[in-house]
Image (cartoon, rainbow, N blue to C red; front, top):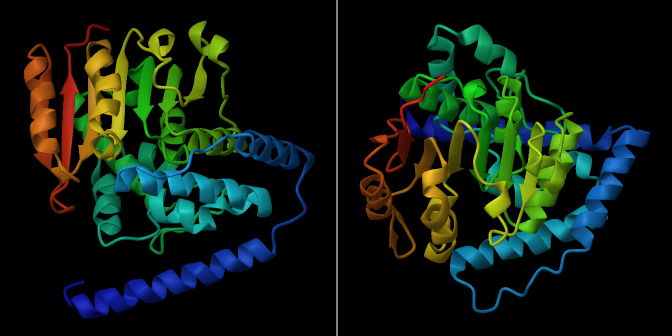
Length: 325
């Protein structure tokens, strides 16, 4: 749409319609089934027992996410978690309801030769009450956004994600990207490293959509499924696989340098491929320089850093070793 004022007005109308639909859905939520109540009670117990620290002395970004953990903890205790994607603390930080670029990403996926594959996995689940795309109500713009990232990586690597045996996703949102990988046929071990409250949210969502969530022992034994971990100092036994991928969309690039060092400084050689989305600068960190150093430190990888044509000043970093099947 060429007229920016009309486009802005239309987006505002769509958001209001979406809010009304979600409100109506929330009012009509049926009584919890036994399985739903079990998952909700488990979620409340896990997040309720967390001792989330005070935000004093933290950087602005750390404080924001720490405050979000406090907010999420309070909301889980008092609200129906089946509608968690309608909560601002989640929807405003890790869910794309609708954006100008949503149609561009959807159009790209539709243009692919394997569109039927993408069409199937873009069918959105009801867990969390996600807002639906105004141009395709079978999916959400958030799921489209994640699928677009994966499609770009597959184009670069000439590999489908189902060929990987191990994924470490740093900062996993509410678990949507992980869900997409399993929909695409991934059958290996998937590790999400995140803050404790969001690990609890990821477990709740993934169990709600039927994805197996593992214990640490089951993960170490090599069983297929997902482990949601929060202690970055206790990852040694959890890193690596025969064909492994490091995945981070705007998470590692928004983390303090000491956190990046504990992940990429220590384990960067453990991964066969990289899918990273980042902004050139965050607070006082020059991310372009940071990721250029990662490339220089690993000359045995094929690397591509490229602009996202439809998102200003946002970039991809793709990397891969040569794979032998």
